[in-house]
Image (cartoon, rainbow, N blue to C red; front, side):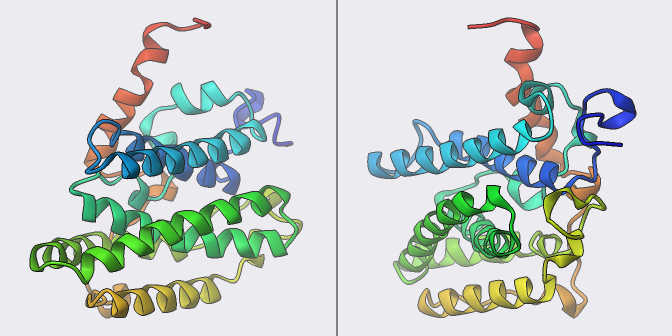
Length: 254
C-alpha cells in the first residue's frame, strides 16, 4: 500500500506513519501556544510565542501535505487517531509551566530533526533551525525563571517535576513505516537522542539552579501512550475547541 492509498484506500495515512506523529506534535503544541494570545505576561513575549506557534503550524502543514488533505487530517480525525506525544497536549498552566514544556519538547525536537537531516530527510533541514530557536528561547526563560526570585524558582521547579513523567515517551521508537527515512525508522539512534537530551536538560537546570527530576527509569510512574492514540483528559477538550469551527461549517471556504 502506498502512502497516498492510506487506510483502506481512503486517502488517509497509516496511523503508524512517523510523519503523522511529528505533524500531530507540531499542530497540537502550536494550538497550545496560540492559547497565550492576549494573555502573555508582556507584549514582546506574546509575539515570541505567536511566532513559535506559527513555526510549528508551518511544520505541521508541510508534514500533513506529504500525507493527504491537511484540513481533514487536522480537523476531521477523532481523538484516538492523533499520534502526538502526551507532552505536547498538556495545558499551558502558568508561564513557567509553558516554558518548561517548551524546553523539554524543543530540546528533543532539535536533536531528532538533526538526526533526520543527517539521514537525508529533506523536511528536517529547515525544521531543525526553527527548533533550535525554540529551544534557545525556552532555555533562556528556564534559566531566568529558575535562577530568579524565590517564587519563580518554586514555580519552575514544580513545572519541571510535574511534566517530567511525560518525557519518557519521547525516546520510545514508534511507527513501522519506512516513509520517514531512506532506511527503517530504526535508523534513528534513540539512545543517543536520550543521552543528548538528558545532557542538555541537566546542563540547563544546573544554570537555572533547578533539580533534575527523578529519572523515568527509576521505577516512578511514567505517562506516555500518545503514539498509540491514548491521550490525557485535557486533550479531548482542546481538540473539540480546535475543530469546532471546521466541523460546524463543513465545506466552507474563505
